[in-house]
Image (cartoon, rainbow over all chains, first blue to last red; front, side):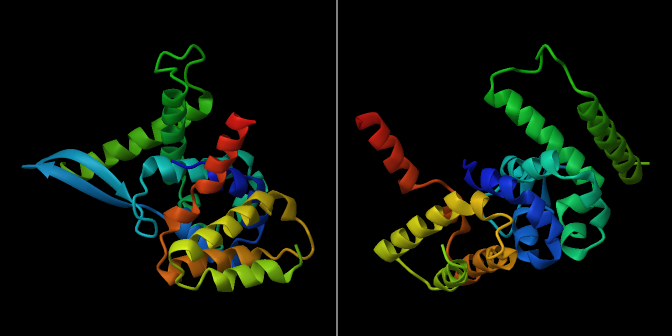
Length: 147
Length: 84
């Protein structure tokens, strides 16, 4: 896969975020909320697939590698502008997507560097917060579907 | 690169090029991306142009994936590096 655009978008991210209302296509393409498909065997869910209709062949790893450079270097004050449409409708408009992407990116970077799960530094505080948010959401979802 | 170049590029990206023409367009696109970090903050570089370029690629029906990977140019660069 390519890290070409993330690097260049990364350099450019401050401007893109500041002028988000002028670059809606960038946000609806590269930072679109994924479509989730559940694969079922009988009643049980056997797998989950993330697809990104604007870009065929994209999956969670592509999407998170594009979004995370933005998240790392974005100025906090920029997020106060999340109410503007292109940002609000993108993955940046929802804490849960951001948490999922950060966890996916963390897992993928460990995999790429061959660190595995027993990496000596362990999980960072950010990872823990993200995981807790996702776990809470999953439990709520299960309770809702199977009370 | 003068200010009209990114605007012109967004029009070129809209054309349904094939074969060698598409190859040439991809090379120009990659040169544009290589210089993108330097454009940031320059008075003549308009963020709207970046938006138009991606919009043109999508509306032309070309595969966006082709425009996201460091294709032949990088391969050429690596080949030169290995030879020299």
